[in-house]
Amino acid sequence: MDHYLREIQGKQAHDPVLMGLRCEYVDGPLIVGAGPSGLAAAACLKQKGVPCVVLERSNCIASLWQLRTYDRLRLHLPRQFCELPFMDFPTDFPTYPTKQQFIKYLEDYAKNFDIRPRFNESVAHAEYDSTLGLWRLKSVGKKGETTEYVSRWLVAATGENAEAVEPQMEGRDEFGGCIKHTSLYKSGDEFRLKKVLVVGCGNSGMEVCLDLCNHNAKPSIVVRDTVHVLPREMLGKSTFGLSMWMLKWLPIRVVDRLLLIVSWMILGDTARFGLDRPRLGPLELKNLSGKTPVLDVGTLAKIKSGDIKVFPGIKRLKRHTVEFVDGKMEKFDAIILATGYRSNVPSWLKEEEMFSRKDGLPRRAFPNGWKGECGLYSVGFTKRGLLGASMDAKG
Image 1 (tube, rainbow, N blue to C red):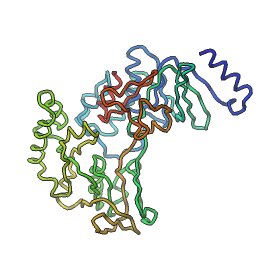
Image 2 (image 1 turned 90 degrees about the vertical axis):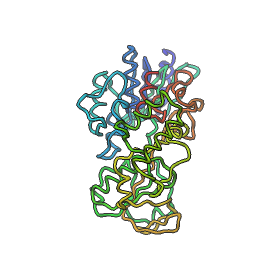
Image 3 (image 1 turned 45 degrees about the horizontal axis):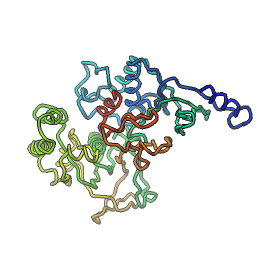
């Protein structure tokens, strides 16, 4: 380590480019990301007496939740399935905490474990130096200053939702109306009395449609693929909790069959309303592809009543008009892209053994994707939400 620091100091003395480079050796793991995954990893290390440094590109913890989510968002699963390690939710919180309550829980979590991320540190490059046997990471600060961190261990905790995904749409420049990703959507209030097309039928897309309805907008939704819609609760229990309990005793395909039977009894045949179900059951599909079923919070009733219209995929956009793949055309004032997020790991981590450069996720399937070679670890890439992140962190 001393050799490395002397080498850098020597280079800085003769290279003007390196003169402003600050170098720091981290005597413990270096964690990239201060969302729930990074906080959980830091807390688990603290519990074992291991110091660490957490780097965060934004100016706050859980930036996705604080800066890029809509106002009415709640946890989609009961709180007991969303707790981070070693700290329960407050007992006075509802079963499905609000966005504000979850942020408060994360802030209290950071205080409880004395986790102090270094904010406005955007990681530009991280690579293993086999000569030194150390990870070298360069980050850029708010004013453009560069810092090189060096550590024996690196934890990627930037998660699956680091960057918004926006699909290519022919004629986008012609549309003329507002087109924004859900990461920029806060409330349906700004779309009052407007015709809005929501692209994407996952949990976010469905909930944004409901929010638009509640603000007297006129929403429609694009359903390009098959989708499982399940009631959020069935038989007096949360659907997720009931599923986890049944999986202890029954094969996954049997549990799927039971879920679909009860869903049909509660929701009816969703295919009648343009929501065809996949051939695989909801749990089996989740395990194989990571695709999460939609837990209905009231949107389906609005679709049934005609308050929300369902359309197939988009062929192209025209001036305030959308042409769909079935040939139909409809006028809209705005388009909301509920088209999800992706990992940004390949943009900064120069490593190809553990993470796929295609999707930025670990190559090895859960639960074996958390540990790589040479002191590289990952937290929060399981496609299993907060529960998966907690399992990674404990590992």
